[in-house]
Length: 416
Image 1 (cartoon, rainbow, N blue to C red):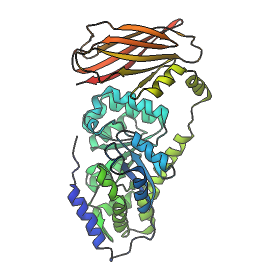
Image 2 (cartoon, rainbow, N blue to C red; image 1 turned 90 degrees about the vertical axis):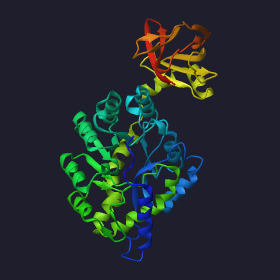
Image 3 (tube, one colour; image 1 turned 180 degrees about the vertical axis):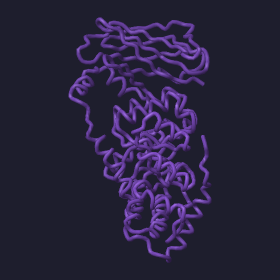
Image 4 (cartoon, one colour; image 1 turned 135 degrees about the horizontal axis):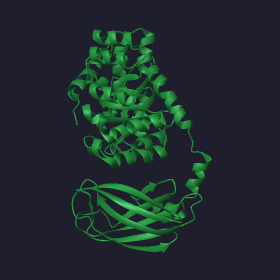
């Protein structure tokens, strides 16, 4: 992971300086803010409760906020509390620890695909991606999914990775987090090259201060008045308390701009980019056929998923498989068991048999023991005696024998 280049103390000092100069040129009265860079990750939920976060946003005078989190449950919590204020973005990380590993973790792509089927989003990100890593299979899959679902890519990236994304998908919509922590001249050069590239100004203390704007940034804003937007970047729990202060910091330097340009950067640019994508995403409801297949996916799968915390769901065109580890977690060299529910979709008649196995795809070998599979009827099975004998990337395989067909579903896990 590449660290933020602007230390928090410097940024806090800039905020304090803007407050001290409040007697200088007045801030635009009531200028709304669309905060295009907010996180509400797992380490913040108990420290700053949902109601407090919403209250901070309202105190800041936010019109809307583009929110992502590690994991996505944080975003869903905020959206459920204030759907008129929160615009969800799907961050690929399940925990903060995946920031530097996600690009080589195939389970991340499966996680993103699952969330995109279940929820609505305006963007995928913010994700950290640098240089040639953008051409790895997992990042490529996220770019493909953004195109498939017509979503924005919110990329915390260097210019090289941005170039590679556009080579993969020339029509992609990319929001460049922190403007790449690059110079105004370099950012302007990138905007000239890519008409679908936008830049947030989150965690940048180099805009100026109350009533003044850095001349290099002013030149960038005048050349591209419709491409920049503000953001806070609440990458730690305590940063959530900065939302109102950061909004006022932004209003301070925006006061030096012409009113129309100040409004564009404060909220209109984000509204123009994000709101149509969000509206189109919300309008895309599952088709009647898809809803029928989902309803036909079986009581056994619904019951297991609802009754078992940590249950994993897999799906193909013909079958849904839900499984959970009994008495987890899985440990190297120790037998473990699975509860499994296999539920056919639509016209598929029934599940005749289930096979469960595990392999290490990179090493091209599997387990040393064959598990015992027992059927409890109605699509329910238990698999006992699985043993993963070494650390690394494993794939659980579920072979479902339907009437006249066999479906194989894979689930990635990493054993340490």
